[in-house]
Image (cartoon, rainbow, N blue to C red; front, side):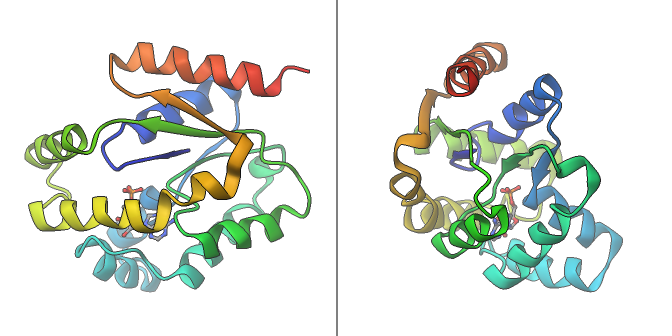
Length: 183
Ligand code: AMP
């Protein structure tokens, strides 16, 4: 799944995972979990996350490579927040060894709406990377590094309008998934 931070990607990815049975693989969640556990990986990731920067590609790719060896990932996964750079996308292609990516769902929400949602979330969740500076940095990096992946994936990309209720956006996502996987 592609989409700005605050577009509701994570919410939709978790629901899509529930509906399809494919596990939800969120690199952001994995990094936050590792940080909470205080592992070496977690502490390293935290230093980048706090500043709103991307964790280095080799670290992120290593984490995903390991995740994909788990039994539950053998039939498919729902990626959320990965890949975020061209280097990651190319590494993923190599990891998949010819197994196809069915669909790249792009959840589109205007930047100002995302910024407001992230600032609101900051009040509730107090995530270290939801400070105004880190939010601006993350949104800028999205445009610079992640949006170009739409061109990388070309015809695999389906853009859904991310404005509306969670249920409405979910229905739009499901429609695209059905269209991409039927026949
Ligand atoms: P997220 O919850 O997806 O917004 O991710 C939170 C933070 O984790 C990001 O701002 C990055 O610092 C880090 N992160 C998550 N996924 C990646 C990725 N694919 N590549 C690099 N850093 C990532």
